[in-house]
Image (cartoon, rainbow, N blue to C red; front, side, top):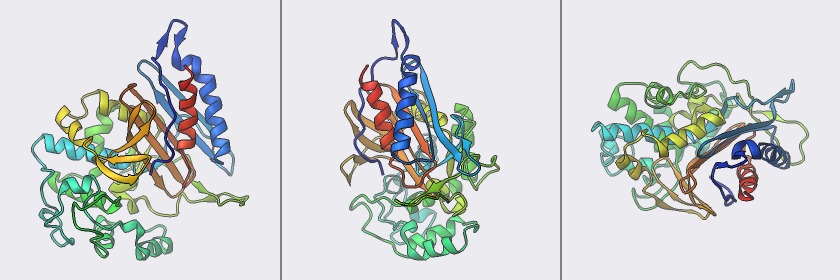
Length: 360
């Protein structure tokens, strides 16, 4: 989840000598390059939206061999940031009277352990007790043995059900990808529409997010960027782009996007009419977590501590890629950073970018 506390002090976007984004662009680009080098990232791309301007930057490579520069507009896998999009669709359906957050899981998946006691809300905020299928050894072994396998939601749900419950529904918070696989199934059952189409018609098209889509669930252009891993002391990068089929992440983490699309999405979520006020209030109703830097989890959103108040967004990890996107309500700013390295500390970059802003 989110790493070290982010350092920032955001000022207004305009001053007498021009837009802040233009004036700080050289420093932001230097900070991006220095942080990516210090973190040993193949490449990184970032988008920072302030009140009246946007800065975009990239550094490094999208492919190690042959060496290909990473572009600002390149799309990467963003892992669990997918959860914010799924939660928005669920809350839109709630606003339309088509889905109750208090409805039991048994309505759609009656055989799941404790299904009669797990609610849609508990799936959204990770208090359901459903075991995280991506931590089950049998799933990991099967995924590694069959990297090209296309997974069905039912298969993923079965892996989660096999070791559920981890705790009684509502007893505490524990992150579980199984929750969002179940949610994807619920949304499709309620609407009779594939999840990828729901996300596209309800979010991507209204916001003109042309670089975003649910990988493995709809026709998309191939990724230009490859995803990598490298252990300390290793010289060669390992290409993990095809380590697992994106359907293995599904509604829990199969989204691909650009940094600019993600910063636009979180800005629209909090500043425009993507959700009605009542649903946005539901989304930011935080439950306590055990992570000091991320003390609260809402409905598909994390709450992170910053020097200017809480940040709200999500991070993502998936083989070969790491990402973080955050909205800062007290400054009306959004930041997204994407990298093509698995397990990368993306907060290293976000912290450096925001240090530049703190000097203004």
